[in-house]
Each structure stands twice: as structure tokens, then as C-alpha cells.
Length: 334
Image (cartoon, rainbow, N blue to C red; front, side, top):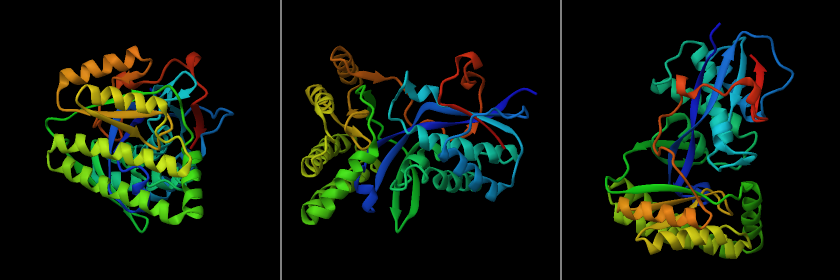
């Protein structure tokens, strides 16, 4: 039998980090570095899938019905050697795993109802490894594109967006992978020890996240750049208050390079390393910024922003030869 499968994109937070956990809006983009899930009727291998995949599969089988196939998940494109790129690999694994169950039952992954069920299953699976997460990364991996996302009383609201026509966005990888849970723990400690200071920081983030989202939805590229710069400052202030390196030295360098070329940059995600996202209105300035970052040891990622969500596997997405498998490729029997 010819192997078949699905794929799901990575994600990049454009704005709303931390604030989204308190009900503020966030803007998130699907990124065209994809996780691949393939299935065959081969006998099972001794390895097992990670918990976010197992949870998503169980939830998806509740929606679509049980299946008996051999599934393998390839996350190679979201890594640089052993290091995660910070593109939401666990969320993409959950989305791809849930989408595989839907596809095995003949469901059209482009239908809204199917995607809504895939999202619900993937979010449940992802919560096993990220119980504090908002679900915005899972939404990006499921629906794709650019999304306005908000979680009110634990219930997600997801709306598709078109990016501002004049806006150029780039991702820069710092080379330092980060454990988001460590940073969240420090912010939680700040809330317990100095709730007033914590609340001031979160209120500032929520205000800027709301203004960023408004500018993004209003085709106001210049406004997005201004709010990105302000959000970077607010994330830095939260880091100082929480004694957490949210905007560390490499992220500060990225922001400085962006400002010197007429743009703005901020952490994409919890900070501390991983990714930065930069915004420009001039494509030539964006290219000069990317070159400056590269010369400074910071790696521009040439990845599609606003990529398609879960979809059936394409030829160019076929996983690498079995002899080249990574440890992040997990087989499982369904």
C-alpha cells in the first residue's frame, strides 16, 4: 500500500503573548514548516507517539470513530539538528494526529465542521503537555492563515484575518531553544508575590495586544509596527518584574537591528530565546535587516507566513527516508 498522510503547519505568535492567557486578543500566523503524519497497515513498531499525539488521537476517535492503522509523525522540519526552532512542534503534532484520524474516515479537511472537530481534538491532546496554553498555537496548526484568537472563560474564539497589505514580516531564530514552562512559572511566581505589579504588567500587555490586533485587522501596517515596538517594551518590563529573561540579549539585538532599518521586532512566543518576529513596511529594508541579523549570528527563517492549515499530504512533504529518521519521528498503531 502506498503510504498516505496529512500535514500541519507550525505557528508564529505575532502579538498577544502572555496577555492571551488573561483573555486579551492575540494574532497568530501559521508557518509553512510542516509536521507530517503518515499511515499504513504495516505492523506496529516498538516506539510510541508523544502524549500530545496520543491525546489528540483518542479525542479524534471520539469525534470520528476508531481506526486501525500504523501512524508515524515526522517533525524534522521544525528542528535544527536537536534544537527546536520554536515553531510550535507539539501543537502541530497534535493537529496532524487529529487530522489523520479525520482523513482516515474520509472527512474533507477543508470543511469548517471537520476542522472545528480536529481543533477540539488537537487542543485536548496538546493540553496534556501544555495545560497552561491558550490554544492559539493549535488553532494556527489546524486552520492555517492569519488568525485573531481569544480565549474567554476557556472557550476559544477564532477568526481568520488578512494581513495588512503593506506589511512585511520576517522570523529570526536566535539559536537558543527555550522551555516556555520555565518562563510561565516565573510569571506565576510574580503574580503570587507581587500581584499589583503583575497586574500592571498584564494590563499594559493587554492594551498593546488590543491595539496591535486593531491595526492588523484595519490594514494599518504602520500601526502594527508601532504596536510591535511597544509590545516588545512591555514584554521586557514583564521580564524585569518576573526576573525572567523574556527579552534576552539576542532578542534585544534583533529589535535593535529592526529599529535601525525602520521596523520593529519582538519575541514570537514566550521569549527567552527561540524566535523573534520583525515587521517592516519596506521590503528592501526588511532584506537589509535580514542580512544584518545573519552577519550578527542570528538566523533568518525563510518560511511562508499565513500557510495553509491541516491538509492531505503532498509529494514534496513526504517524510525522509527511514534510514534518516530522527528521534522526533514516532510510529504508533491505530
